Image (cartoon, rainbow, N blue to C red; front, side, top):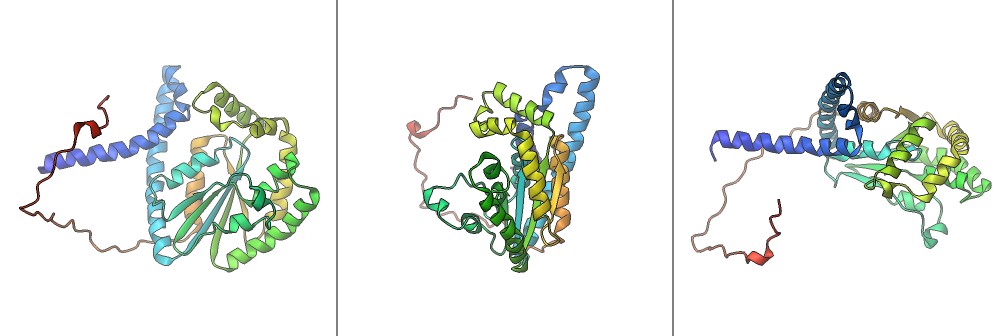
Length: 301
């Protein structure tokens, strides 16, 4: 392969990588503005270009952070909380998109099984805490007890009070043990959540995101608000403060959250030995056998 062909291949690979993010944006349904007023379409296009440019820059910084965490054997735990459809999953996707899944891991636990219900409440979460050189992202966490479990009546008020007594001490212990603990609450308005729920109802590819619990949460909006305010007030400490992300605008929420995450952990460059691709060993007596045609995936496209 000559230099010109190699350059074209590299450019194609980079473009394909960027297309992954574009596919996510298409899935978000944010391109509807491009089919309306031409002036709006032009403005939206400019906004999208700025968004992509900054997102890719921040993702490059996330890779540098990942290298630093691995090199320094840091233990990083990031908690993402918020109402249903607040955009937590979208931010987590952009954080992890270009990182090593062996270093940056996502934990999204289902409802506890019968055995877990008999354990200490925090036990199943602690099993997923980061080791040295790892970043763990909790897509919801032990704060379920202060939110959904409380509002839906899955636990009693005595359980909630015990939770609030335990959390500050538990998180202080985690921080003292060397874990970098960062907590985000994604905040959206009543109107925005209703819009996002309606979009999911109308989109067959997104209906799976709606559960009976989500629908019930709409009815109990005010109860969730009271529970959230109580939770933030009683678990916001100097050692593990809450950070609120304004999340009505998804793109700005993603950029702001990633930018803030990067700012919370001082990091630098890690020197890597130069990577040299070794020459392939060729044995004169090796003959590659043919692959039976029936083993190939049909070339439909």
